[in-house]
Image 1 (cartoon, rainbow, N blue to C red):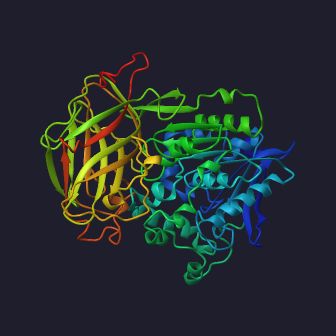
Image 2: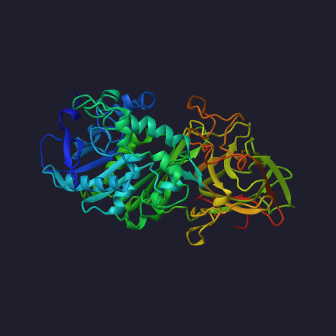
Image 3: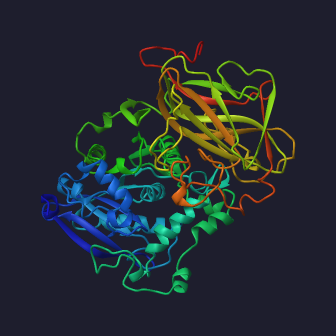
Length: 587
């Protein structure tokens, strides 16, 4: 036993009563002696007592192999997937409370992920923790992905004792970040996630579930119920998302009103988190009403959350806002970016705002005739046609003349026609080194992620000018506007933010397809075992009901030049020692 573990009292399966009489189960880790302490809390469906290794064996082995330092001073026996390690927090004067959400793990009730009921429960749990004798009444929320998404929702309800949140790689807009990227149903990941991670731990799975290292050893409750009973006690979230194909009340009820998020917050995004783990952290940082908000951006996968330097950052933030320590945090620069270079090399740089004020917004024009990306104004008109289910078309730039940094959000303006009444457009920005090797990244979505991705359904092209910027068009997704075959439409596509410093001689490429980007093959697959390295991971948009033939199997024509100046807007960052970028003459 480590010294940290010896200092903890662990209370398992503490019952937290809800207003309707349901009692949620919690594990509480707290100091064995001393005055009341602030609380770090999480609530979700993954099992409060399931060990990280039992939940995600491959990720655990990778984490410990790559970063054995995460176990310095910790036994690791209380580590859980996407949650803070109690042995890192309790010795520093905090209590850690983990709650199984309603209908999940050891908490009975109807399972309905990210629902208004779950959010109401979370707010009651926060107030319960504030009233405990071992609590100071200052509650902070901390966790990754699902455990970050719930934070935005709870914070918007403004429970009185919520004092600060750390939302790490957590989507915020349930429609745009999670279920329908660009209005296209994200079909594979939600289905895999729901069955493997949520349903597998539904309360009542009992002996079929994973082991709980506390309580009586059954993470999904003491009863083993038949499947028919379990189905009656849970919502089918992927099916509901498929049914609600526009941004309606269903999605809005699971999307936080950022104007009501006023608590101090630290939002941590992932550069290579396409599909779930990036956009929401940027938009929540810029959109939240809080006067005390910070943005941290990193690369890689969830490993970053557990690293000692990340825990130090998290603890400094909570020490300030939960303990009131004068540790200099308010003077911390509002934006901390881990700037990427090829080869997963990162350098921490602080900034004052997002997007960066000194950004040199630069247009790269598509040239159909030469399949080029041109820095100069568009050339003569041209067209290129590709099959919607084929490999698409790729436009390439000339070699860069100087080292170039691209950091920030991006947008593409395309002019397109379809042979049918609708079309999906997937846009992928890639980079290649002078020798021809593609620059790829170890990301939360894929271990060989490209530089940036975005997509849009043609019939969802309507934007809201009041909420749009040149670098982030905001689509309303509240109506369907079928296309007239052969008619040319202007389409503004949001690409999720990125960061890279490229050497001289590197080239950029923009790949436009009618289906998900897949590197190195034209054969579609939904088998997770064969998706690694293709570039999109399991975040695919391939539901035949959402993309029926023949509508989405036609021909797409891109128009460039002349009166259809198709272009990519890049956030080029001038060197801080020079006022201009060599790519932005005269800007």
